[in-house]
Length: 446
Image 1 (tube, helix red, strand yellow):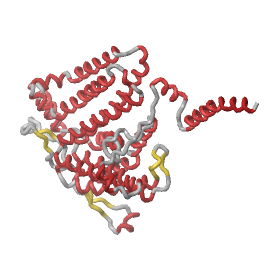
Image 2 (cartoon, helix red, strand yellow):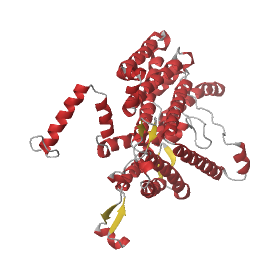
Image 3 (cartoon, one colour):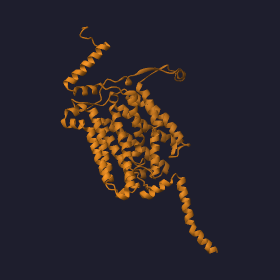
């Protein structure tokens, strides 16, 4: 009887262990639908991580603990990336736009590769080809709009460019429709659900990556200060939150990122606001940073020379009575842009990190540590730009809502491309309007 009982128990033991493991998985956040999707898509095993630290750093830091070794690796690579950032800023707007495009392509590649590996979509026909084709179509649409908008005179001067500009949206739609038909023709009977899943994966990636990089370039054309200050605030917040969390962090902030602490979050906020004020003060004094980036038709090159707007002229502000006794001043001279920088740095500190939390949740969902191992100690390019994309959208909306007004140079460029009779009609209409306003003297009064 005892032997029989042992055999029965031994046969039931694996079932009990299986039930326990299933319950543990569910407690860890996995639902029944997750399990079903795993079985259908081939499972999502954790991607093994390897030490991608350069051998030189490994030898130099071999005597340190893993915690301090990671601190030094991240610090050294961060300084290297900041140096590279300063170099590309020095090289000018064209290089910056090229770098944005390269970052966009790399981020797209990292996210698509995750979907390709995690869901074992190796046998899907045309999946990678179609993914890159859709990237090409979306970039053609967005950057074609930008070229038409900012290089209007150049486009109108060249016959092939004028034709492409006139039918740009129709060509873009035709290109996308071709990819759509190719996707439908590629559908395979046993892979319908997976193919549509990856189709959605590609389009969401395009929405997140390409649209945001397009907004970054639009911000750049408003003036390099609108590009540099927001990006620098995100970088500063990332560094200072890490530093405050490393040395003073005790209270966990969010479960998605166990290493993030309230001490780091709050310390990073105050440090970023102060940094934004100082950086804005320095940059507001240079025309090369504050002037809009425009295309010079005579030299066929970008120019950043203008008369600074009111945003970048020192103004005197009264300090609130509550603070006068503390600081000992009644007034302070500062640039109006510095006030806007407080809004930018506040967003970078309080809302920007949620882009990183979103990326952390994404990585946890697919059991991967980083998007890639491009940068030792930091992960992939997407790991460094997850907050930047969210910031780019905010800056673009902020400029459109509170800063941007009609651009006279663009209106004149469009006016000059009209037929003579249309130009004359607009001239007479504008003249009559100015006479009514009293700005011009009418012919009867002269």
